[in-house]
Image (cartoon, rainbow, N blue to C red; front, side, top):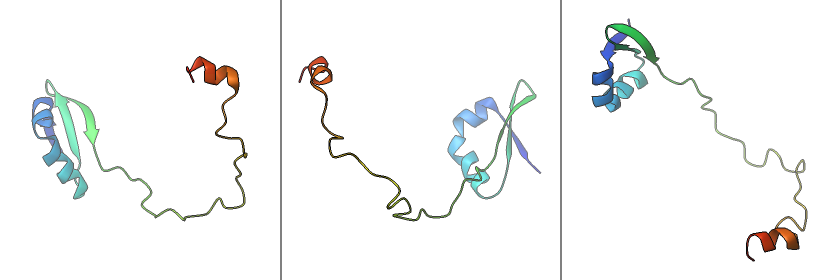
Length: 77
């Protein structure tokens, strides 16, 4: 069951509430006795990235770092 916290408590104890959420809990934040938000764990992708997965699919032009004269002048170069 989700626990509730007032907005004042949430502001003062955010780190503790985040710890609770990381442990699998859920926090309903209330303002004036009315539920206005839910704090729950983000289900983001936790698989590590595969290095080099774009190899051979992307190329960078040899002149990538060269600015055209008019743009360089606009930046004061």
